Image (cartoon, rainbow, N blue to C red; front, side, top):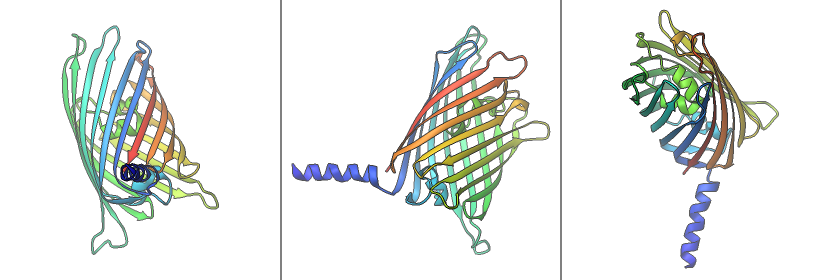
Length: 296
């Protein structure tokens, strides 16, 4: 009996007090309130495997993988349902993504970066105004880290109608991800991204920043996100996106979030997103989300 108690205590300590991890599981749900409907929810789940242990003892816990340049592979799933007086559908999206940080003999002092992802969306329409739709989204990125904790990357994305990015849903919320799905005849896009995380001198705080763009010859969208890490465990963030050129129905998408690591292995968070409708679209949208992570 004492051996069983000791084993259970060791497992609990490993989950709540460890400063290194190799697996991460994240779950999220958003309540979606539009001008015509306030009864819809989404659900998201993602599992990530890191090829080496991630040291979470330095810097913001939320950015431990990025600070460690931790190569990984992840699987994600998104479920959404929406209905109003006209539109009625549910969608399922499954995605896979891999990220790699590496050096070569010619770039030993500058880490390189590459990522690839694939997402498949299956939208099941429930009436004549909501036809069935299946779409695929492919994305590639390459980049480099010219200084510590600073990534610059460019890429290519090809998307068919209404193909969501599960990573974008988890990072920015369904409203922004839907607005950036680029469901139009323009299927090939170039992407650009910059990300930085750094300590604020003389304090226990850090600052994170990410800017993303997706565009082709005549259409584009961009997003900005800033996080203030008040300490390694607690952060508050704001985000902004403009997806109006993608025929998304949304103009500006504003967001705010707070995340807290109860232990180095478990976090909880909440988010709010406001999406302003463009002319001709009456669906101003607000979402409220809750999320949790577990690392082991």
